Image (cartoon, rainbow, N blue to C red):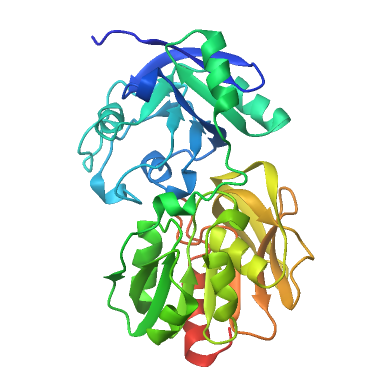
Length: 361
């Protein structure tokens, strides 16, 4: 048996949780980041490799994580960008015909530290009451971990997109249309769906509007990504140069950035939406979709001029989708690619194809 590593997780408000180390050893003995919770029952590998979690430590509310191991086919990015993982119990054995290894070994291979044995129910209830906040875990004493938590940055006011975006353009898929996709932290599942309807040129987040238009795309896609939309780099100022000139589809951070470019406002939520079972209603039809979500920021309802607000979260009323009235553009806050999550919303990729073909949805 491996040696038990006694760890503590200490939040910035002084709340303390005991546990055991798993995965890689924390760099300099401490892993720190904004602590959030995710409610999915499966899909832990897709969650851990979602670049949108840059700057954050992920708490899984489901108590038993790792039971079906890991597979390279489930990676949403080449490596995890999150800063740590927090679980109640790591599976001692994994079993699946797809499995290529165990989650604990995978964490070690990727240099990602984790803490297990944590009372994740108490932690989640605390985050729901107090809001997502920075925490730190490791083998150190409570005082040093509290100091590390207070010293670590959260996600507000930071450009985290620059940490996850591609350094060079690349092409994906072989569909009949031409799409330029801004990589703000794009997921592999998202590209697979886009690749079915278009040949996709994925470009870095700092790519100018002039360079995008020079590629003569049929449409522009704004991907998911981490952090504060107001600090997402030059895409915030470049996007107005594309509005009205080419059809645009945005998801998650892309939805927020499109809103800002059109004159809207965003805000940081108390603890965000992170899970695979969030009910969203289409205000036009009354249809309810069960959606996958991962965001800590949201668009202020009523703040974006020239749009019809199309979708709303039934849990808390957060704006979840909009369609522009005067230009070919639409966006949603949730994740229609569903990696992981339900498939209720995958029709939105077909709507993007319709928008590129006809100019209307």
